Length: 282
Image (cartoon, rainbow, N blue to C red; front, side, top):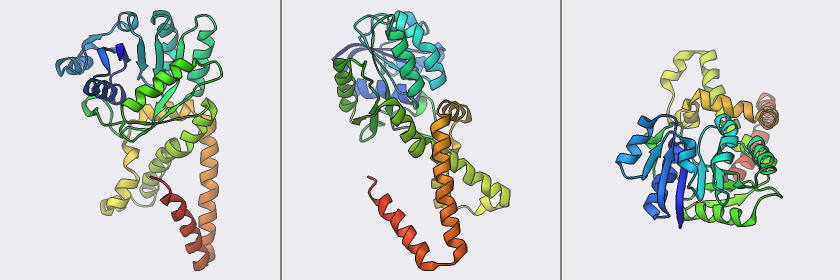
């Protein structure tokens, strides 16, 4: 049981955590912290949170478990203030989609004031954003990646793992660098490619979009995500994303070469190899 869960940022992820925790009765008190009070009030009126505040110190000073659910660029800048305001025994975690810089910042801050920080990233979300689409079941069956380092507190890691498992997630651990390379490949690259697919049609003939069926709409759905959010993610994970784009370009060039060759058997064999790999996804 969490005595006071403080959630900084009450958008899709933060709001979904609040709803899931309330539904499962995992915290005695849930405090939401945000920049604008009016953005927090719906959760208060719905009874999802017990208290709201725009004052970071007020929101986390009594917390024993603090979840940071703000954009990655904001999160890194916010960490020093969190480090000053959080109680000494608090567990601090986050939902940022890149981990390298955030974890390094936390380790640097911990050198002057030891706090129990565990980086986290739930692989769940939507092309839409905001508290209005938050839902209690968002994390059920989702993968949550934790990114402890050799400096991480084992008790804090166990507590954060238990927290996410209580929300129905499957928890795994990766070091921060491997995490950023992995999500560049399976999350950030697909967003970039979805945008490129739409742009490719625009370059050929924009009117072709008029006949786009479900397959194209499903494949490019994530291209409707917030440009500002994804610009930050692309910039923050630039080295790993560049590596992923290079791998994608090689794959695309290989497939293009097979098509140009006219070798029907080779094309089918390659598509079947890819199909079999895809079937292992659950």
